[in-house]
Length: 489
Image (cartoon, rainbow, N blue to C red; front, top):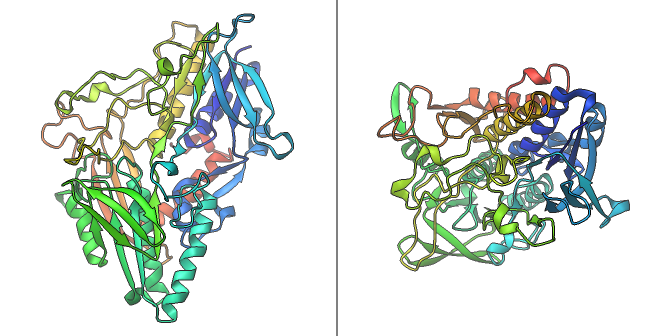
């Protein structure tokens, strides 16, 4: 019997675990280790953050789902990986620490045959002083990164709306809280949902709404921007995004590294080297991501963390980490199997794998401060990676160690994104976009780096309905209800 341990129960880890168990059956063991008791459909947190959904609408308990599937579940966080075992036992194992209330802090070693690191990111609020505490519930800004964060954000938003009803003008600042952030898309959705809710509340004229981002241009989104088909024309995402902001009277600051947040004020540095500050009454700034802090040790106890993980804490996989300067970057630099090059029974997927480099062009201010988006690895790509890794491990177990690995490179992968611009049965809107490939391939697609036949976008009520349907569809899938395997990642 083989044992597969999956670290993390988010989109990528949950996908990997559930498919691994389905394909391996009862003859092999699948274990999930995640510090959270609940699964969260994160794309809908933005609706929780404006009071249009509850926490219960976007989460569910993991334990009964895993029990039904025959997956062993530890509510715990992984601390250490020992891929060579120790001096008395050569079996690889992980050290975990329980986060259950009645077992809090208890340590346990669990041996494995295969390990999938799908831990996702550490929300690195501490990278920007004043941005928030470890829970993202700082005194100065709010967050929608978790369901609890989003609930807190909705309460703070309602306070602002009430002030506007009483005639007090409010300033809103939404975007990224550091020069090396990713997930511009989440902030993009949130700013337009706030604008939509203020209109519904009849207080839009009492609000000043501003976007602040580390993107060098609107519509970069951490993928270097894109050209997409819209209304029969190839339109750049820059024009697409700028038109949305202009139509909704939302100002913007781009190329910005937020370096400090105080009560009602954000300090920032721009790509031109100048400094500024922006006042606010309400601010939601996405934190930068880092690895969760896993450490690795060899058989004699020597620390080999630097061999297994990149400096940012994400696990090294089959990527080209020596690509060097931007001019040398190629689509082939990106990993395809997500297998660790040193320990072949370890894989990393979703946000947990270390990208070879950014997708957007790297930029720095004259002061030497890097200001550019780091690459997104969430949503649809995370699910596809998780399923591919699960397929590879199942083949290695069932067919033998020579079985070829399944591939899911972001340079050969398309992705669909439905970005809400306001929730409503008849007046909601969303930007529905597809991109192929996620990582541009300028050798295959000169000029744009992408196939414009499969890269397109539209905005309207239909997009909102699609996003709403996807919300229910993916929660159905994650709960392993009837036909869940037929729903694509």
